[in-house]
Length: 456
Image (cartoon, rainbow, N blue to C red; front, side):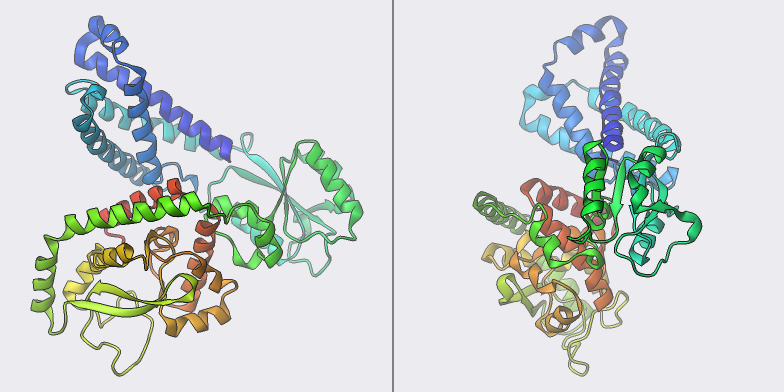
């Protein structure tokens, strides 16, 4: 799947160059375009292409599993181009030597929208063709194996995989897979891999230490270029989360990632301070407007404070603009906030939709209670219950909670233990992959979520 993604991005880079040169042709004509283009340094082209690719990533144009209708894809491409125009215009204003030319930016981006849309339509047409697909084999025939196979073959997913079938004979247990989908036993694994031209073997079951013969066969397959991967590692890049039903303590201990070098922690804290100060300065003019709207909408305080669980399990006071009736839990006690909660005031719905209610949390970030990016802080009343019902839930408190995070942009709303379970899988994924680049991407994707009004 990575090769297909790289091929898709490579096509965008090619058409980005074509769009820029096409802009030169439209702007200067054929006779002057070659000379004008040659006088521009490589940095101009590299900046132009980099912004295009990053904007496309933010708008999930490279998320093959989320390719929707043609209209939706074109909308995302056009939105990414608009963001690219704004970003490049700001950079050109701050760094005039990088300017590519008067009127050239708009022409080139317009061409790129057409080229990128055409290229992605062509890519989608051939992406699911069986002769281009990557053949996978699932070792196991139980419920876990069936769930993996159904996920890969689901019409909603678009990963470029073809399921060759299932192989029985792992750790035993009842078979959930139908007999016609089982194409052999583990004793014949090497032959099946050759016959079916399998590139990946997905282990739906753990291999026991006493299965020496199976280990030998798997190692031989690996040495012949076949990728051997366990279920959580296989599903992780496709789902953007760690599937809790496949995880155990040993997997988490020996898996790559989950590292926080001191340099990363220091830079992340510095970034939090800088961004929170900038955010507070920019949002200060909104404070009196929001305060007036809240006061006109309902009696009560402007700000809402609530105890939440932070890093290392320590409680802190979270700040928000009030969006509900004052003392909304006076009679009910602590309850989950619902998606269409009747306690939320009309102005509160607007504030929640565009995340204006969370602006005061910038002070939590500045104080060090929170970070810009991290798992959402939960209430102490719910943490004990969630810790009992969700595996590894307490591990999310090893990092600071955040205003936004991977779970927030992938699973926008949570109002039950089931939702918390789902979001925990995304939090673990972020914990495993967290980096400064990942944080920046999440922050930029959050702006996309806010712009399109997909907040709570």
